[in-house]
Amino acid sequence: MSNFFPRWANWVPLKLLLIAVVLTTVLTGGVWYYFTPKYTRVGYMPDQPVPFSHSIHVEQLGMDCRYCHSFVEVSGHSNVPDTQTCMACHSQIKSTSPKLAAVRASWESGSPVQWVRIHKAPDYVYFNHAVHVNRGVSCFSCHGQINNMTTVWQAEPQSMAWCLECHRAPEKFLRPPSEIYNLNWRPASAAQQLAMGTQFKKEWNINPPLTCGGCHR
Amino acid sequence: MLRTFFIVLGLSLVLLVAVTGLRGQKGKKTPIEIFPDMDHQPKVKSQVPSGFFADFRGDRLPVSGTVPMGYAMPVSKEDPLPDDGKYATVQFSSGTSYEDTGRFGDHWGTGIPIPVTAELMQRGGERYMIFCAVCHGTSGAGNGVAGQYGMAAIASYHQDRLRTMSDGEIFNTITHGKNTMLGYGGKIPLNDRWAIVAYVRALQLSQNATMADVPPEKRAKLEAVKP
Image (tube, rainbow over the protein chains, first blue to last red):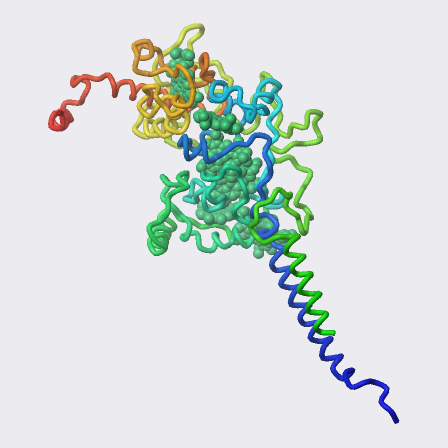
């Protein structure tokens, strides 16, 4: 009786298995790498209607975040400033600059400047700015080096895993209350941060929620 | 067979990375929501537009003559402000008392209507540095950084007209602005505005004081450092 199958056919099942293993690995790796806010959100840098630069206003002029984001300490929502905030200066400074045309149009018409929103928690998540910034968490921990950005982009994934990373060990991030709005402040060393953070955590009774109901309420 | 498979796989990976990019790359694409269930619920959150209203404003402008929910009501004299040093309630108000307007009837009043404590002065100083120092300068001489970029005629507090000005009028300037200075009434709660008035008074005193204004027990210390 002659062979129905040539010799190489013996290897087919093995090769198919190898292909299946490689494909599964690549697919899993791809999902792990791409299907996460670390890829989908970080780096989101939309064009804004006005090329507003935090680097000019915060670094060069030394303005405090709270001049514009004025309710971040007292409210869950950190407000994007209204047009009057800008017009306080720009009624005189660069008052004919084409870059500020949308601000002037809004001032005249009374309808707001349409800023494009960057950071956004899903609607089923409860997030509150005031509880964080009044308890030793700086804007820097969650928004990165905003003070040096000419156009704002998202620097942190703000996913659930990311929130929990800090909630499980807040001592790695807590700062003295005087440095919350100073985004250039850095602890002298990781060890000093840990010592200081542990002390603050104890003194202030810091106890961030880890139960589902804390953030999904 | 295997060789073709790996070549095709390699090429498609290169293509995939070329199209999708790496983590953290800056881009204008609106973030993809992989599981968008319940991400966007039909409730209105702060500063978000809403199709429910004809002008698409989610944040409604207050109806004139009403007090929005969650805001403290105008405070009357019989119902004094909480003076525990905390600023837990944000108070913006449209009341007509001296505390709300800085005036009694049709003339300015003077005096700070809340207890002036060391904490209040500190609070005033902090708020002054946030809201006023960019224009008026840290010492109130009108030499803040905005002046260097073309903000004209910023008033210095160290002139007789402002030294003799009533507290109520300064309060009103913070609330509603004056000439080229726009108002800060919508940003700074009521108590904080009075705290700033107290701090502005302290700044004025700091630049226009004599030895007689220094408490006797502190005079020796000051004499010692006098050049």
